[in-house]
Length: 157
Image: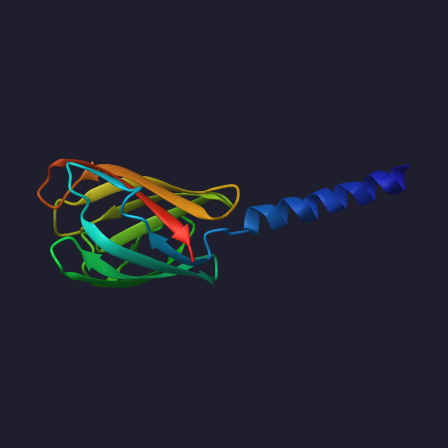
């Protein structure tokens, strides 16, 4: 009985570690503008694709797309899931720094800001239970300092 309990405890510990270490955000995700919302409108992007790759202790994200005004979006960063800020390279994003924390395999929180401007947003990313949809909701201030909320609905490619 004691041996069976010990084995069950070891299996439970391994399963827990594997579940906490999982990251269901890995893959290629494309924004569906029709399902996304921005206040004040209109939504600031025409198209947006995020490629999320596993990195030690975090994620490498490469984003490409087009803003509503025709400006190209091309950014990348590699962030740890410890909440520490990391620089965002490239053009087209309103932020140049991001910090991410992993809550569980399907949920992440983040803070994005422009270190020399007024843009600042905090948000949450949630992957659906079927793994086909990722919803990113954020609120904060836009580049002009006005209050803004954004919900981007991504579909897994």
